[in-house]
Amino acid sequence: MELHILLIFMIFAAIIAIEEKDLLSSVIAVGAVGFALCLAFLILKAPDLAITQLVVEILCLIILIRATINKDLPLVIEGRWIFNTFSTLGFIAVFLLFAWLALKELPGFGEPIMAVVKKYLQESVSKTGSVNIVTAVILDFRAYDTLGEATVLFTAVIGIMAILRRPGRKK
Amino acid sequence: MINNSKTGMTLIVKTITRLTVGLILLFGIYIILHGHVSPGGGFAGGVIVALSFVHLMLAFGKDVAVAKVSKNMASNLESIGAMMFLLIALSGFLGGSFFLNVLAKGSPFDLLSAGTIPLSNIAIGIKVGVGLFAIFLALVVLERAK
Image (cartoon, each protein chain N blue to C red):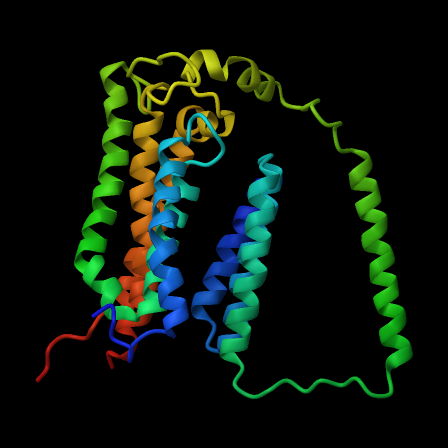
């Protein structure tokens, strides 16, 4: 149910991003799509992808906003140091509170939550013959992921070669 | 071309580079080949191999490094690495499924063990090493083409 609401929201935000004339509004609509995708990953029980999506989204949003706004943004700092200090301290306190709550829930070292981890640890040597369990996981059990990663690198190299290539001979 | 004093850095850097660059390349190849018995693997070893060529380029200037690995050779090797990895993936169909480890497992701690994993490491090593070097080469050589 939440997933459908998120999907409809993403579709509407994407349409707004295409149709909007103002570049900055368009960029912000794209950012809304990204954050909704992040929430969708969370609902689909993939927190690692959600974290990656969040980080990439924030970076892309900052770069795109910086690229669309030409003039420098005014930075007001004088005369407001009390407010700035207290808001900084408040955010640090909130961050520490949530970090404490999250760290309490971490499983102990060597006691993984997921059952599949125990299977990897017990059977990787007998099933793959590789003593390096990390290599056994990335190149045997989860080799399909590694193929995707290699494709990402390949695409990056092709993109850089295509952008930086010499222009056609016009002499 | 190597002893040309006009390109690259000073004589001290060039001498040290001449001594160390082969060792760095060899260490990268060692990391790639021993990926299944010790920490490391295709990605880490490939980065070290790429860094040895970057080292060469920084010390001697771009012409020496381009003479070793040209841009066409870099893109060809990159594609060959990707195709090798894909072929290893498809060879799993000999046993019935994608990415199945079809070769003999061997005994643990041997260099020739773990079936297709060392082959995958070599393919990824070629791909990553040449790919990273190709990115560096593109940023250095193709920058002035306007």
